[in-house]
Length: 179
Length: 384
Image (cartoon, rainbow over all chains, first blue to last red; front, side, top):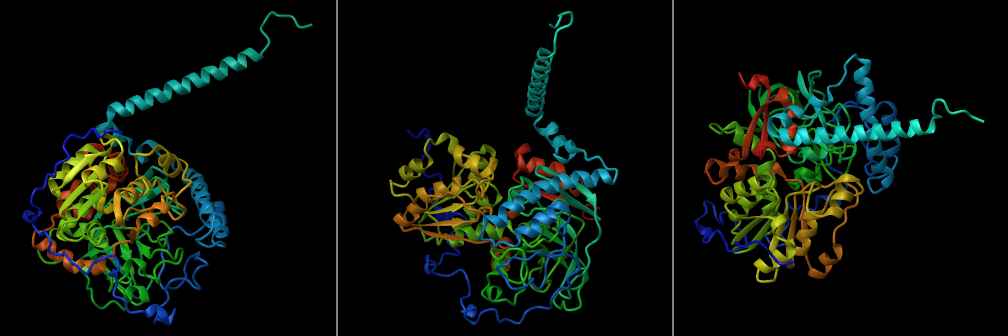
């Protein structure tokens, strides 16, 4: 396809005039130059002096590609419910396996439903419009928001009308005798 | 305390959650003063990172005041105002010892491919993040850095991720004096990568995106050439043509999983979640770089397979580099650049939003409303 951009000239004529130009240039930083302080410590294996172990106060799942739980770990949202069962099953497979990641994605979706139930069980009806930031849409992108709502409403109405007409057709009309 | 609460794809809200506690002798509790929403948070927000659990608090770009310390913390004191690198790093494992702080082996039980990251799903270690009034900071003697006297807190919070990630993108690209550098993505990291490319002596910097207001911003900020890919026709042909038909010396992917531009990648990577994201930018990077060139990846992708033209990598003899930024390794140099006026990170912040309005903040950033480039959440205590 032919290029349609007209301005393909360099807009910066003299880079050396840019503040800081070349201050970190390093001729040794070629592809083979490592981005680490190479010390070959890994040749000694898993042998470093580990930090103290954080006590396990909640259930922590750990990858089967490591022998232990890391010295510190996050305690946010431990596995629970049906999604937790799926996550536990997923962690029987390595990070190399679809058996790990796909169930985790499924568990995330199940977790959303559990989140609704949790909210409702606490007497909280989630305000989905607020959670999705529709106030910001209304303020900054009103035309698009209104368009989407109207299109959604029209499609929904059409679908309802179609389904109703279908159910009416299947009912016998009044006054018609059956033999 | 108030904290962001993830409820499912595209749904977040502010809630009251229990205060974080010291759970390890090397922990600190930090009262948050600034917390950005990162472009990579949008991968969580959109539901494309596995093991992102409902109820979690996001946020890995944080500054705050130390409120409480574990018994083994020696370098910080109560009241210090610190910037907190997004990596959680022990400083002792073999990877930290080699300054690969983004690859710490003692901070993430759930995945071995990446070290712990605040508020970045359980694939990132299961830590609650800093889009809250308080946050637990493990290994407080390693990551957190006292904000230098006189530094603007808005500059400081940008040093926790955006600046180091953009800088490391340019560093990993092995830029040599006079090189032509192409950056895919004019988000905050892409903008910073374009700016930093000059520091390594680039001869020409080109940024490609499809959001015009961001292209206009980077054109003036970096400064650089900036093009909307929707107006380029075939992006790779454009790159070849503008580099005398050889290709760019280096290409940086600062987009990652949410890339637009190719219907098949969008369908498989963003709609059906059948791969680790839409690899459009990476595809263009591999095909648009010269033979023997370097592709530097800082865009975030999910952990499952992603379709890229790997045959071309072999046939062109490319070097591909990628990593999470090693923030602690880079901080001394980057602080110097900010103090000397070489880098002006706070200029990227377009929106300062109360923490309580986190739902709207995510929507504004995600949908690119109101010419948003970088939103920062500010908790009530930091507003008074």
